[in-house]
Length: 411
Image (tube, rainbow, N blue to C red; front, side, top):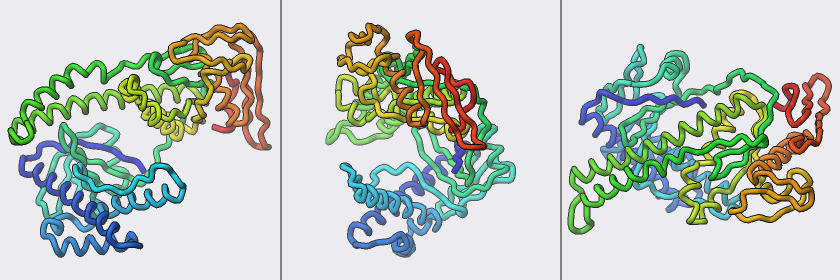
């Protein structure tokens, strides 16, 4: 599925209030479906569809919402229920019991309830809320897809800076990548965002740290506008709340833009990318480093690595991070060290290199082992080569001096 986004503009205050009513109604339908599942054992997806029909007959505001949009809200509830069942079957520690939504921010329409203009510059919502026509502001790629691809669903999302329409297409994005024959192992960290086996480092801009001053200022102004039990939530309070939300939104967009551009660059110039699969939920329990870890957003970066790897048909491998910093990349001797120790000194082979570079080499070795290729490091003057024997008709890969010479068949 391919998703394109456009901003809804040139609307009146009444139109935006009607959008808010549609969002709240979708939240109401979902919460009612969750409650119906809690009170009745053995509820199926079809039963939730029938519940939508009953709610529309009982509540006039629920009838205003398009019938397909009501079903989409029920599908959201069923998705959380089915995910809960699957986690229970797997025996996960955190089951994720379905919860009610207090602050809904989106409503989803299927093939009805909306109509796109022929020039794809505006959209008209035709359900009972009388939202009317809103202009679409988007880039050239989105407008081309709106003209050429079939739209399956339209999702309206409310953010701090306005309303957005997300168009869902039944299409997979595929592009022809340029194969360079390079491999890279990435060690994720805080001092250096990434460092590879060749000692190439990337420093993270720390967007949250740079915006902390503006965040604190906006938060102080917000706290002065409302005191529980003493001051009501006035219009000035909501204006201050929206200003604070826009500061947070800018920070999150900066972080996302950084992750997309870096991941795209890494996948473009390498055929095999290996990174460490960090358990971030466990790492943020260290409250001294939690803010820096969340600001770095390693998970978002690795998700975009996987995404671009699928688009360009390149190998992106996640490996376990266990002992990648402790084991010597030259001889395999395990040297225990604390986080403050930034240099790897091996007493067995007398090698001294950067701790992160040592980890990157170990990560690359693990990833190449998963792909079935023996990779030998030549950083310390040891000539190494590796090869993979393929079946008849398949491409083979050879690696010399730590780099592949041809495009490998596992890509």
